[in-house]
Image (tube, rainbow, N blue to C red; front, side):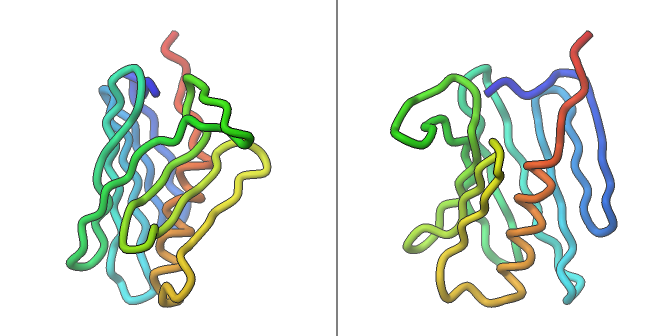
Amino acid sequence: MRLPSNKGKADVGALSITSKHGVLTCRCEAKSGEFINARLTGDGGRAIGNVSYGDETLVISSVHDAEGGVSVGTAVGYRIEGEDGLAAAETLAPGRVWLRRGLPSEQRAAFSCLFSGMMLFAPPDDH
């Protein structure tokens, strides 16, 4: 996945998304006032980065396998790795989010906010 080299920004309440120099960042504020932050770097293929929430730092990566097992060049979603899998989001329509069962409601809301922002963000054209 190639992240745009130009910059763009979107703010929706407690959600902030920026893209600058091939780095995509997304930040959501939980009801507790705690923030969940994601930062991904793209190299023209896959994007990988970290998600921090509270004391945890998790790995987030782009997903390039479409439904049916077809591998595509552009990202079709994102996956956050944790114990027993944690969360994933599909960026293609209809744009679904999967969260690990048993995840506390505050964390469910934070990860859903993060993925919603990433699904809605459309980087500006490079031209």
